[in-house]
Length: 144
Image (cartoon, helix red, strand yellow):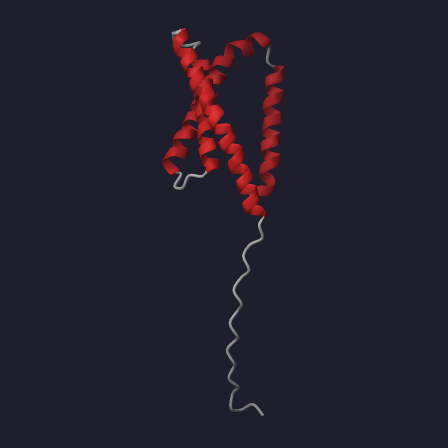
């Protein structure tokens, strides 16, 4: 997909989902919210696992993304999962504290990493090396 089409496509998808969800009755939304929360949590957990497996060099930005994904994964998974499983309130409180700590550390790392990334992007690229002098062309013997 071409990058110039990505933003309109994403915005159109979000708008379509919003319009679909706005037509659903409230009692149906309340019944489906735990499934949505669990889906979001498991999606963030999967993203976190892929990031852990495939990130070769860690920057402040990538560590911040990882920790915020971990916080989202824990928060949403346990928020949705508590409707399906009998989770003790103490366990929910510990998981909420874990999510908060991930956000507390990850959000500043992400912000600092993004600012550093922007700062590096703003710097002009290094000057290219001067091209070597072109090789003289040999004229043919027939030329006057």
